[in-house]
Every structure is written in C-alpha cells, then in structure tokens.
Image (cartoon, rainbow, N blue to C red; front, side, top):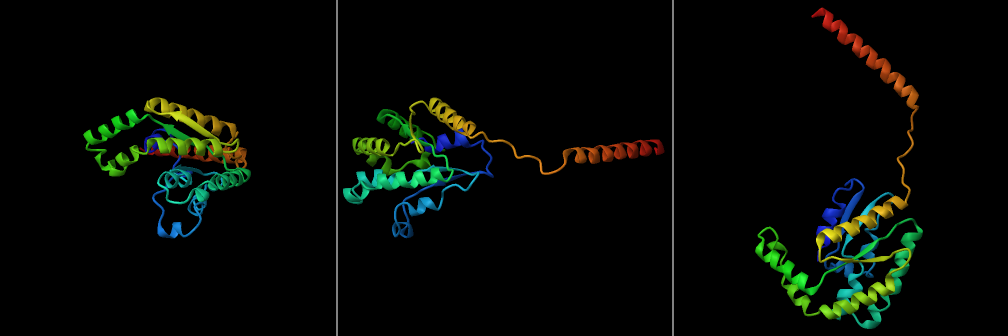
Length: 219
C-alpha cells in the first residue's frame, strides 16, 4: 500500500519522455502460458530510460506462495531465476533499485478508513484488501524470505518504514537521487561550432537592430 503515492510524489517530476511506469496486473492467459519472467522481460528499460515497476516478478514468490497457486518446488526455485535475470540486466548496464514499503497493520487499517471516508478514493476499495489482511503473517514470512534471498549488490532491496508518507517519500527520493548522481551523467557535447553559430547570431541580431532603426525613422 502506498506504491502509487510514492511514484507520484517522488518520480512525478521526472521528464516523461525518458520515464514510464509499468503496472503489472493479474497475469493474462497469454502471460500465464509463458514462464513468469516473460512479461517482465518485455518491459525492461532501454538505454537512457527510467522504468518504474508497480508490482513486478516478485508477485510470483509472494502472492503465488501465500495463496498456494503453485507448489513450493516451483516458487522456491524462482529466487535463483530472479537473481540471474537481474544480474544479466545489471551486467548490461541497467541500474536496479528495489523498494519494500513497510506499513503496520494498524496503519493499513487507518488508510482503509480514509478511503471509505473520501469519495475521491473510494474507487480504490477492494474486498480483497480486507481478505488479504487475514494472511498478514504469511505475507511477512514470504517477504522476509524473498528479500533475504534476492537482495544483491547489483539489485539491492531497500526496506522503507512507510507509516509516515513524508518520511517514505524523503527516503526513497534520497536513494534515487544518490543513485542518479553516482552515474556521473553529463549533458552531451555540442555537435556544432559554437563560435561560428555565435557569429551568425550576432550578425543577424545586428541586421535586425538596423532594420528596426530604419523603420523607426520612416515613422
């Protein structure tokens, strides 16, 4: 809970030409006919692009585990597949940051109340949200194992205390900024002779000023 708000507040000001959000919903029939990483691979960022995953391949070691959608011998092997997949991305130049936004059961219930009381957010209410609360301990166990087995130097997990939204946004922003700064990105070098362009500009500006003076005299 809080993923959409984090994306909006932290990354909403980034250039939309180089940033996109990919929200993974319940798998379609086509997606289920492939391996669990198939739909993820189609959305990885191109060079120079920032892609935010709203949900991801981790659903396949969380939801499917808690709800017993596949046997343990299936989901338990996926940690290794995930690490290999993310390592391949990293080797090819993709920088990966993974955030786990942790809130308490009490805070989650308070946010449900806020949704009920606010007509602008009532559309977000789902029966499943309340049903999933009964599985809280199962999800915690699933998250603990997933985070411990897939937090690597090339794709680290950051556990963000998120009961306070301002603190959540501040911490995520700081991590993102530090990662971007570490890339040492610079503006591209000009592809033209700037001195030559300046001379052309000044010549045209001088001519424009002269025309304005002549027009003023005629008046």
